[in-house]
Length: 317
Image 1 (cartoon, one colour):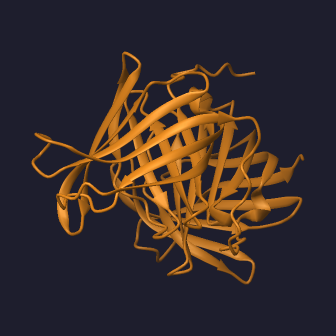
Image 2: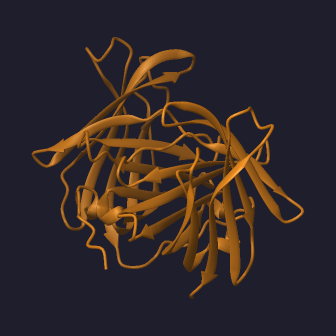
């Protein structure tokens, strides 16, 4: 069995369930000092032995969700954090930074009310049962900052109650749970000569946002890495954006985009393979006890496709 190296435990403290007190500035960057306070919950887990941290925040008073996806870069030793909420269903631009001396400071470029800004997140005062988080904006390149959102976390023993919201989609509900996977992969993925290699792996999947976010983690012991998939649904376009995360890179890869029609999921997007521009195609065939996935590459703009990776998933739970 492959021994996976634990790269970081920075966000292990957040694993579990929390009650959260939010304080938010009503009108950021307006000169106003009017604040509002409300309560919510947070449920978090880690993947890649701590190198991915993901949480779902529930805001009962507002009837919506927020989710943070945190990725640790093994080369940079920094975290990249993405935020998405169930109002827009879009990934916000990321912030990046690292932990030092018990606190974390992360900064990234963003936009607020049409104005370019810097946004920052900070974590501090972490204990076994509590933690503190803050968000600030800067309009002068980081010379000065305005605090606009704080969260105070207190651990709870039970899972928070669900929000009473209509289900957005059930497209990837079939994947929830644990699976063994038979892989058949072309080596190399493009070019001649090639061989087909076969290997076994396993996968675990779950959903958030009433089905509109699907996340899985896969273990590939014969290849010495793990993979995760982050899928985000857009109710406006009724399409999915599907990102791959490789444990050796710790980054959100270029997405493929598509939807399910007549029981088949088709997702396509541009990418680069070994410096060569390509198009990537995913096919998903759902099933309760067995499901299949196939990846193909095209070097001629989609006129022809070269299948290079097939997975057959068999349920184990």
